[in-house]
Amino acid sequence: MEFSDVLSNRRSIRKFKNIPVEWEKVVAVLDAGRKAPSSGNLQNWRFIVVTDKERKKLLAQICYDQSFIATAPVCIIICSNTAKVTSFYHDKGLLYAIMNCAACAENMLLEATNQGLGSCWISSFDEKEIKEKFGLHQDTDAFIVIALGYADEKPPAPAHEELYALTFLERYGNRIKDIDAVL
Image (cartoon, rainbow, N blue to C red; front, side, top):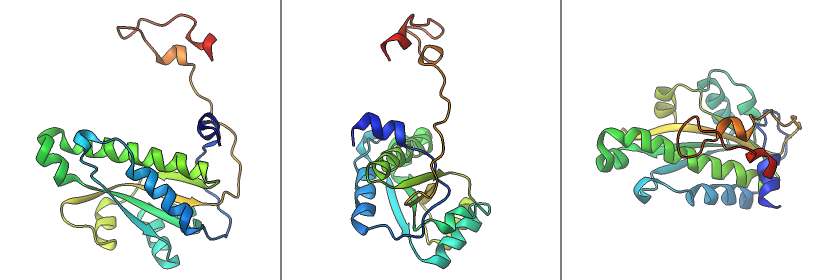
């Protein structure tokens, strides 16, 4: 699939077919996350792959009862060795750890689309419960959950603001005339 098609076709999927995801595709998604950029190349991300039905139900509950999570064939909890980043960047460490994991997650979502899979980024959950129920170490934090599987829905493309409204040249507020004409 062309990269521009991957960008255009990615959606947040909350309805999945009851079809197992091939392990090779899961590994491809994980590998894409591993290749993300990170502050100081610290690569602080860690992954917990969840496929057990009962564990996915538990995860859905921890994610404030988002029941669709339990129906995804695969869930990936993106964790961070945050201590590794804070020891290097001190008071900016937590922010950088989160940003690194966000870049990792975006790579994973795009690769999921490339593999013909649907995915959903979830960041609403009880961090303490995930830490406890999924065995995270004291210096490790969970930042993102990804639900993964074959889509059983095709949501329409969301509206996006015009590039003109978002982009400035040299100084905030200095709009770039005709930038949207290039698209």
